[in-house]
Length: 114
Image (cartoon, rainbow, N blue to C red):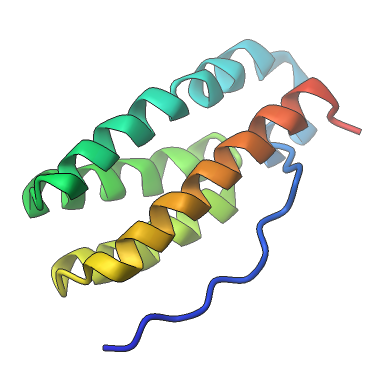
């Protein structure tokens, strides 16, 4: 299985949920604030090659990303699930970097949704 080249990450993404329901900002902000600790947890699992935890975390984040209006995060996590099953460490390292970029972009989108 070859490692795909990931496209450039956006510098700002705005929750689709917030575009439809702006009054849910606090809930979305809580999700975005929880991304860095979750990314740290994923990084620890990857360092330990804890495939079960990686599968669970990627699956959970895939669903949450979509629920909170971040399809970019959801799509990325769906791809990661495949690479966790194949135990492709190189891709997962690149994926983790991309996930960090998307977390920063989501934070930027909360700060400046326009």
